[in-house]
Length: 60
Image 1: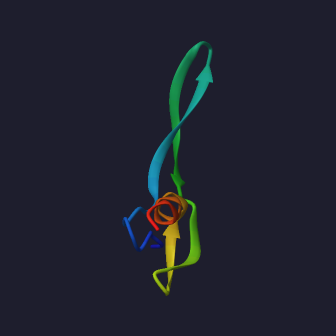
Image 2: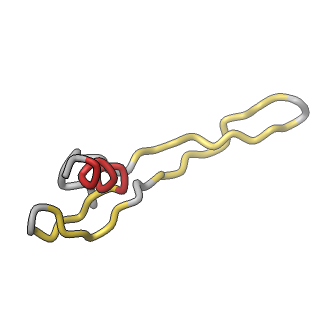
């Protein structure tokens, strides 16, 4: 499973909701993935989520 090497954020399961005759019905589940990118942080090549990349550039 791919996950961020800094914060450990990985995929999660989210439920879809479909509106049918005025009521929401939980129909199925889908997997949501974080926005992972390959980048260099601290001279090392890592896979990090974009949120960690933004905070790393702020803390320089």
